[in-house]
Length: 344
Image 1 (spheres, rainbow, N blue to C red):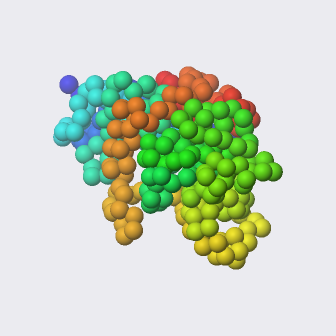
Image 2 (cartoon, rainbow, N blue to C red):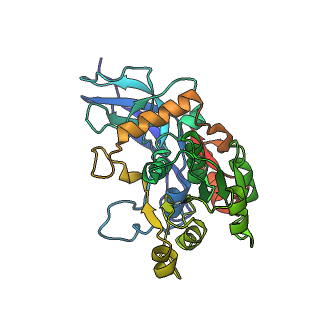
Image 3 (tube, one colour):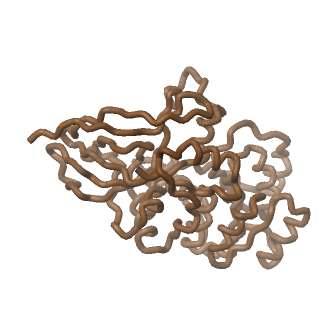
């Protein structure tokens, strides 16, 4: 019996600061495809708020096809396969999977292609946690670029969703001591739920002294900038030890000003590294052998084993019809809105 089309519901951004809930037709899966019913999808506060507020640098770039309005946000979710097309061998009806889900109830996905980013995940991982698996690939890129981690002092600047996940990944990888830096007190409290983490405000006039005190007299070996603000790189370079590494895992929107590269970078032999999640590709590259399947298998194993605990950072698990309130909360109430997932 041939499956029939169904009706889906999705979140759409038709213009800045505007959210609509729209219906769409979902076709049956064709050869090599599966139909996934979404349990939950995670909001990527950096990318999605940049589009929501109209500041994303590619919105008005005629050479780019993404993102453009009307925009269906989302790229990380968890759901269950409810139908399979002919030729599907990797999955069956009932399998629970994570994939780059938009904020929508249903998706038809190719799963028999070599680059299919669909992976099984255990039933015991809560939906609001599993929804962040694909998104977690972005902070994982910071670890891949950090090279030596065990026993290294790591300071994470910016304790939003990406920074909180990065902190927990570095902890799982053996970094010590760990330091969080953020101006929002509740974010610092969340970071301190990780054993041994100490936190400070970025405007603390004695920040460098406190960083040294937390690391036996030395500044951090690695500073991870997850703030999303371009000028934060100046602070990151200022508080890392001589010869240390500054890893840019956020997506800064704009141009960094007043950075003295002659002294702040060259004079102290600092290494400044870009670590966007898109750097983890499907094929090993010279000096960057990590791949998407390898990253996803690791993240799923960490979540399933409990070594990566994300439930404590999820502040809201709201129905998708509350999406606008969630975006506005993430934008305007950083004390109370942290990681946010939408349920369907």
